[in-house]
Image 1 (cartoon, one colour):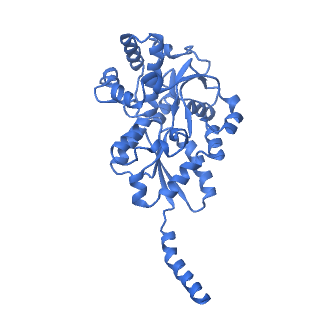
Image 2: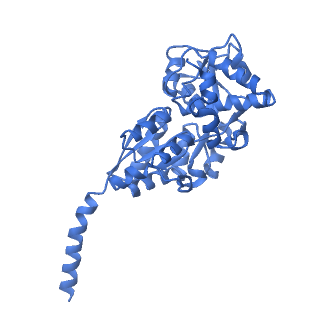
Length: 328
């Protein structure tokens, strides 16, 4: 009897082994353009906990990334900077419509906001959003048609203008159009915009996520650049999701979930904070509290009525963004 039991167990193990061996050990994370460094660090830490696993990265503006997935980029997970681009994948049948319930904080492990980075000494004395519309200021941020980063900048400036002009649509739109006029070149993504500002030395101020402004100053020197936190900005959450259509095809769902869960662990949160992101973990947030200045943040629900309304009123073909951006 024991011999039969042992033999049966051995046979079962024999048949199970190939299945285990064939389980995917690689993931592709499609992410936003300025997230290269933080995910290089997150991936390294994750792999230490899961030897034999490989995490590949793809980086570009998230609207471009979403279209690439629909066109064949087999990303197991997305770590985007804009809800609307994941909603686009939902509409295309790649992500489940309840994706925001799969992970904490509406599937956003960390957050930031559009902030300013100026040249050392702040020679143009740029302090707030209204300075971006001055005739003597050149502003750098990427194309809001291709970059989630830039869409947050557009929305943050719009939110400021709503308050400043007390909801007067004509003045608000004139303000946004003037800022667009002050942008000498619209790059396709946030990292290209950083190159324009830092290496090509074009522009007086770059508008990007606070995490990116901190990374630029750290890499290139605080003697060359300094951050400016505006009076108000827009909460920028970084949503994550499993690409169901891809993981079901590859059999990588478990690994994909484990990977995204890691971003919420204390270690994953600490790495994000080290790279200038604000995090939800209370212990880690307290550790980094002195590094992050106070700022009044507004959110898309309160100012614009939510992402669905934003998509319809601002980002749809022929909507407000198209009207103000024009043929630039």
